[in-house]
Image 1 (cartoon, rainbow, N blue to C red):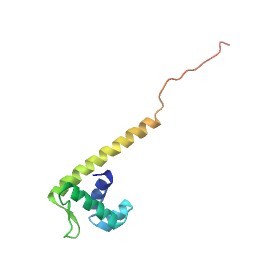
Image 2 (cartoon, helix red, strand yellow):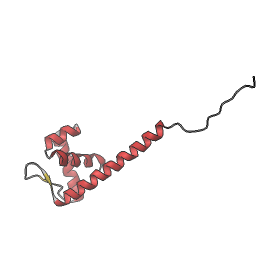
Image 3 (tube, rainbow, N blue to C red):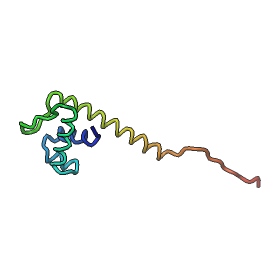
Image 4 (spheres, rainbow, N blue to C red):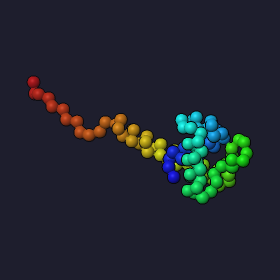
Length: 100
């Protein structure tokens, strides 16, 4: 399971259409579909019901997607922490002056 796969299932849940979700993720539709299918195989459950249009999550899929949203939000927080730390000045500053 990768963060990218989680991004793909969140995008598909948001757009409810494979082509729109793949466009949003800047990948081809077969790539998005294949990665979601790999995730489903790894987890051993179907996340989406593909027999209906628009595509809708299964009952367990809705729970997985909710957790994926939380996980992605937390992953972004880690990136934000790093960004904030890089922008922050820290350390010791010494200033020398002459007595005149």
